Amino acid sequence: MSAVKELLLLLPLVLLALEAPLCYGACVEVDSDTEAVINEGFKLGCIYCKMRGEVDATATVKWSFKGSGDSDFSDLYIYDNARGEIIDPRFYERLDWNGSKNTRDLQDGSIYILNVTYNDTGTYKCEFSRLLKYSNYDYQTAIEKNITINVVARLTRGMASILSEVMMYVSIIGLQFWLLVEMIYCYRKISAAGEEALRESAEEYLAIASESKDNCAGAQVAE
Ligand SMILES: *[C@@H]1O[C@H](CO)[C@@H](O)[C@H](O)[C@H]1NC(C)=O
Ligand SMILES: *[C@@H]1O[C@H](CO)[C@@H](O)[C@H](O)[C@H]1NC(C)=O
Ligand SMILES: *[C@@H]1O[C@H](CO)[C@@H](O)[C@H](O)[C@H]1NC(C)=O
Ligand SMILES: *[C@@H]1O[C@H](CO)[C@@H](O)[C@H](O)[C@H]1NC(C)=O
Image 1: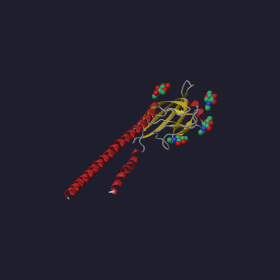
Image 2 (image 1 turned 180 degrees about the vertical axis):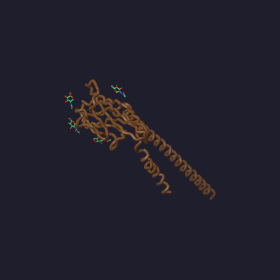
Image 3 (image 1 turned 180 degrees about the horizontal axis):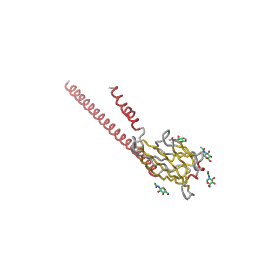
Image 4 (image 1 turned 90 degrees about the vertical axis):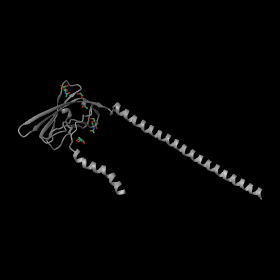
């Protein structure tokens, strides 16, 4: 019995462990965050999934930046042939590659700003180009993403996030209150039922007692 129970408890873990290798490597094109905090690190996300996993490919990523005072984009960073290069002097020593590592077949082209300043406010453009190598021809694909970054002193949270947290507390407190009411109600009901039973048994006792007294009286009279 307890062995079966243990097995049932372990089953989800086993399934999870089996599934993990399948999920590993799955590519999801998540949008980048757009709010960077001053003096902290920030990851500029840019993911371009390869739909045909079996086809060999190489990819390059180019980032450009248009600061809030700039009129046009200028080259910021290039990642090609498994190495990256910072082109914009404003970002020297402050950028790191956060994308796919040790491969030319990139799917993640994210970069990381080590120490964000207010001057980093602006639009970042990520250009991903991929060369798919079929057996007798090559096929070029490309995407472009614009990410507008706002530098803030502290992370502000979206209204939806705040609202959902408030709703969570409201529902927790509401449920506990309901539970309390239900407990008091049940307690009262049980204790009332208990009193009723006590009263009933007392009455019964009294009835028996008076009956036996009557009997006694009757017996005394008879004597
Ligand atoms: C980031 O830069 C600011 C100002 O240049 C400096 O005061 C701070 O120590 C730096 N933070 C890190 C983690 O390098
Ligand atoms: C991105 O790069 C930074 C700096 O090298 C590092 O601290 C951070 O852990 C990296 N993040 C990921 C997800 O690779
Ligand atoms: C931001 O840009 C202004 C104007 O170009 C410059 O004077 C200032 O030093 C820059 N600040 C940082 C932290 O790089
Ligand atoms: C990114 O911005 C540039 C210039 O503002 C624009 O030409 C381009 O179409 C935008 N790309 C996307 C994917 O929105």
